[in-house]
Image (tube, rainbow, N blue to C red; front, side, top):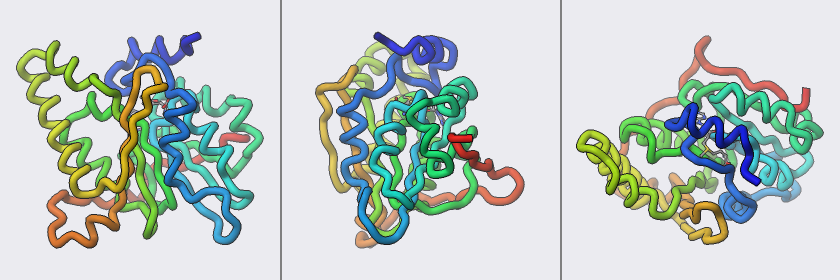
Length: 234
Ligand SMILES: C[S@@+](CC[C@H](N)C(=O)[O-])C[C@H]1O[C@@H](n2cnc3c(N)ncnc32)[C@H](O)[C@@H]1O
């Protein structure tokens, strides 16, 4: 049965929610595949951007080693309230932390893996570039950033769009394609999701080996405007 909060938010805040239903288990697993979780040794830090109602967060939390942590960022206050009350996430206490904010306002920090659930198809190309390059800059060496896009959504959007919207969609796709050419280290098709989705894995190391890195990078915000995390389990 569809999550009613998700359906409501899809109509109420369509641009930022971007989906009628949360991600399924197969998509969550595909997004987490490159994360080097559960090993002994150094504690690892993971970040999920756009956690929604926690469909992917719960899978990521299940992969944490005893000293690993997972930071969730969610801008919608109603989704954030749901995450705070989540019975699966609460027992993790301080190991799963929530920042109720736009990812653009996130404080400084580096991560051993990032999963991003943002609906880039609804954003402007400049926002996509700023967010993705900002996140890539937060990765520790060897770490990856994974995001997904729904199969066929772009074609449908282009068919239905008026002129300004058509231009925006073309620019967003060109931006994402440029970023993938530069940073993609793997991809997969998840047919068993509603709707089916492409999962893309990006790594800055691939670009470091390349002579040109044309996509500009933005430093993470610092100072009093940076949003602070809270423990989900308190
Ligand atoms: C497509 S939903 C994905 C939700 C969840 N990750 C999943 O896969 O089921 C996109 C989520 O990103 C959140 N979001 C959109 N823009 C955001 C931003 N700038 N910063 C943080 N979260 C954002 C939305 O509120 C929504 O929860």
